[in-house]
Image (cartoon, rainbow, N blue to C red):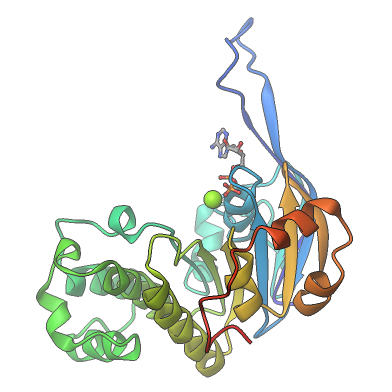
Length: 265
Ligand SMILES: Nc1ncnc2c1ncn2[C@@H]1O[C@H](COP(=O)(O)OP(=O)(O)O)[C@@H](O)[C@H]1O
Ligand SMILES: [Mg+2]
C-alpha cells in the first residue's frame, strides 16, 4: 500500500455553538474511516456535498491531523508528524484543487506559479524546465507569461495539474477537478490525467460527486455519506450490484442518455 488510513476520525470545533465555559463542542466530520490505495491505483471517493470527501482527501495528505486512527504513507506512520517532519514527504503527496480560479494566485504568472512550487522543493525552476512541464499537460510555452485569468477554465485546470505533477509526486488527491468544466473539456482533462497516471505510475484519490466520471477513471470506488464509508468495491461491481439503497440512488441519478462516448468504457 502506498497510502493508508486506518480507522481515522476527524473532529473540528463546532462553530454553530457558543463557547460554554471556554470549552467548545466538537463536530465529528469523519467517523472511523479506513481506506488504502496501492501504487498506481486510482480510487474514487464519491458522495453528496458535505459527506466528507475533501476532509478525507486532506487527511490522507496530512493537511489535517486525524483525531483518532492512523495515516500511513509508504509504510511510515505519519499520523502525528509535525510540518518539519512532513516536509520531505510533501513533494511526494500533492493535491489538485476543485477551483483553479481560487487556488492559483491571480497576481502571478503561470511561470511564477510553477516556478515557486519547484523552487520550494529544490527542483530545477529554469524556463526550460517549466516549459517542459507545461508541454506535458498540453499547454504551449507561451502560457508561461500569462496570468490565470487570461486562460480558459480547462487551461487553468491544466496549470493546477502541472503544479502538482511538476514535483513528480507518488500520490495525488484530485478534488472535483472537472466539476466546473463543460463536458468536452472535462473529457480532455480526464484523458490527460489518465496519461499522466500511466506515465508516472501515480496513485490517485479521485474525488467526485459524478459517478459517471468515476466509472471512467477508477478501478475502485468508495461511497461516503455523513463522514462514513457506506460502501466500497471494484467500480464495475458496485455499479453492477450496489449493496446500499443510497448507492443505488446515486447510480440512478446519473443523467441519461450518456453523452460522453469515447471515455466512458
Ligand atoms: N474546517 C471545518 N470546520 C468545520 N466544519 C467543517 C470543516 N471542514 C469541513 N467541515 C464540515 O464537514 C462536513 C464535510 O465537509 P467536506 O469534507 O468538505 O465534504 P465534501 O467534500 O464531501 O463536500 C461538512 O458538513 C462541512 O461543513
Ligand atoms: Mg469537497
